[in-house]
Length: 210
Image (cartoon, rainbow, N blue to C red; front, side, top):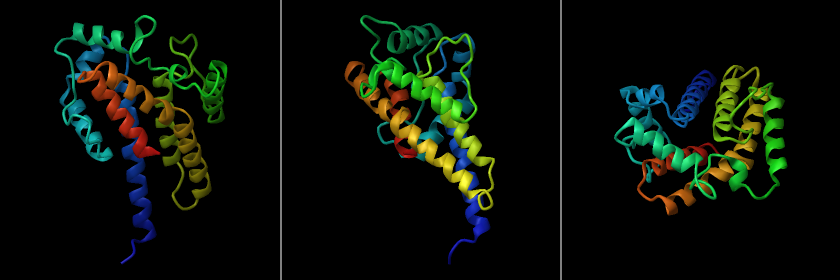
């Protein structure tokens, strides 16, 4: 038996909501260390969401339980040392232009900004992160899934398809391109680290969304 159009639309809406939740979770996961962030990471709901995302992406190389350091101080120290501070650079900067060498820095930043503006988004000013920072890119992917969900599966199929095409294009050209490279570099530099578990999950989500 073939599923009815109503059933197909319901399944599509459910998948879209799951993807919105997944990319929001990833965005929140990679927020800068702070006491509130550490308390958030300790919540059972966060651990449960981690497990759900691992299952959804069939990520065999990702721990089933969210990997974390033992203390808030260790979390902040490790996060900064892994993602933000180091000479000549940290092991895994969360910035596309560090990893994407296909285009000059200005081109990478400009194309990210053009993607955001195309869908009515502007960077907050003043902002700490550049346009190609992971947090902006995660927020944008989440926003596209949310935007796609606002259009009816049947009557607005063309608009939904346009948004889905833009999302796939952004993933292919940007976050889905550089995150696997960054994860591989971190695996070589910091094998077994909790941060590698996070980047491996992010890589799996990018591959599943491609």
